[in-house]
Image (cartoon, rainbow, N blue to C red; front, top):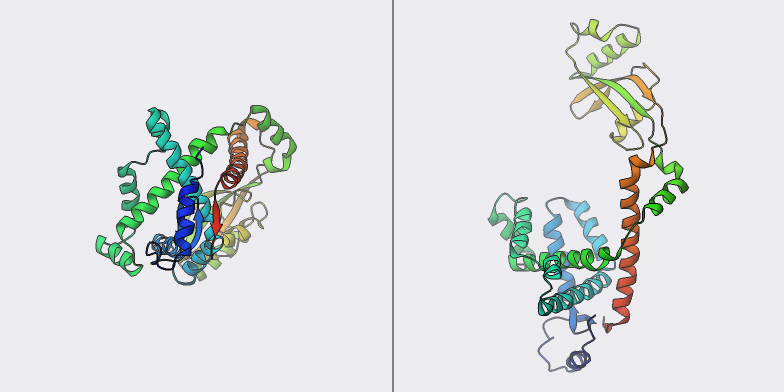
Length: 319
């Protein structure tokens, strides 16, 4: 485990108290984590980089909401990330000295991986020029993005290596959770339907009426220009859009729905079969239960690990 660099902390503290010191003059320090300083610029950079990454997916108010949610507890998140990065670099340095190839392989970040992730971001832009312009607007360079990605990857690697590596799930834990939570393992009612699609609402309404009066779909094919598809839907799995789900799961067996407009089409649903819900066998859900228990244990180990890092570190919030 990394030891706190008391001497360096003392230097940083002295620098903070000196008004003539130029080292930290450019940016206000908001926190000290061992021998690292977190500045207001660090906070702003995270938001700017996040804005670049999110701007291709979200726009306007939605983008603003995403960024606002990031601001919450951002300083604590940066402190925790800095602790993890310090620990990762310390372990990696020890591994290199000891020529521990396994640890090096698990932790070291390859340049081509960083390039690959940068290229994935660039793909969301029409051109490299547009990407660079977006960076310039935020006062960033591609090197800033690459450094952020490297930190993200190293954080993920140390969690995989140091935290997830400590977690084990025994078979009896899976069985116990399955037996204690029977309601969580119901398959849910499944419905099998015919979906008839048309381009015109009046035709869809007429077709729906004809079917409800007992006429056969095949007999109506010459009168209505429709397409037919089959669908199986399970409400528990949330497989349908809400508006479609509301229609489909109110139908009785062999019942025909009124037309529903979805985008530029009109749909009529015919319920053909209802498959009752059943309790899923342990063999069917074992991987999901294992993953659920594993994620929970990882979160617990992460919390313990971060508490341990904080306990053994010098942390001072200065803002």
